[in-house]
Length: 333
Ligand SMILES: [Zn+2]
Image (cartoon, rainbow, N blue to C red; front, top):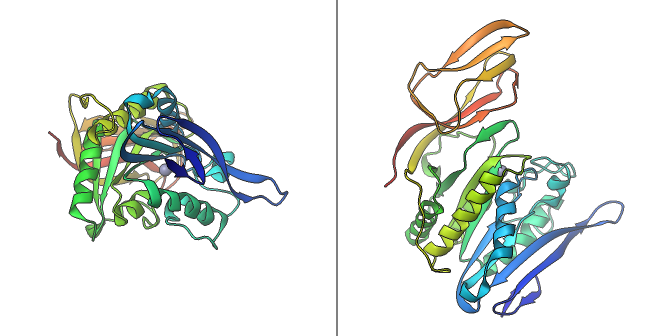
């Protein structure tokens, strides 16, 4: 029998419950929802964590739907979903919580005596470490950006090669077109801020194969990307031997090994001329910067790019990110 967060779930059973993780100043309890689907037969435990950033919804929405639809008779092992890992940020409709201004995806494995966000991370991660044989961490791009679903796997120094191999198999099986591999040993520091304390990195270090599914845009419920998450989870379950069936991969998969955020130098309004999934040669006109009818600048691609995500919100200031691009990529066959 599976016992998660102190709740027992019988083989073949499903459960939905909430777990208290702390309280607010006016004494309201803060709870996180948990969904469990336990197979009738033994097998791996796949943990799906979503909304670690409070406005990133599509992946966890898909995980929730899939768990509801799943037939536990034909399931080996179990799925455990923490769909709203960061309830404080979720309430703020924001990436981070206004209670302590912390980014939960820098807070793992958490701290039982730390800030609110660190304490929630600690409560969740304790259970992940106790149960999970594999993990998918769902994210989206931030709310100003549009992107087709993509996956991200990290190469973390010191991680068991077998763990990396399983994580690679899961990532490939997940079955989206664009797949990123980020080597943290030679980090190009592509993202602002720190990467230590991310859930997937913490899992890999603890021997739990993990990757991130980036499912569309923050602050939205997007049906195609919810369905992509459901297909991806099902494929990963097939890869792990939890359910029967062939892994369904897209016609083409691309492995991106170098990425970069493109930033704009001037302020104004932008009109994007390219879209997520486009492969563009150097010199392509990517966007127009304008200001109440006056054309300011046409921004051209400085190199060949695979467009991972593009800015949708037209208002830009100096330094704003206009696109997330692959600089080096190859066919992933
Ligand atoms: Zn995120």
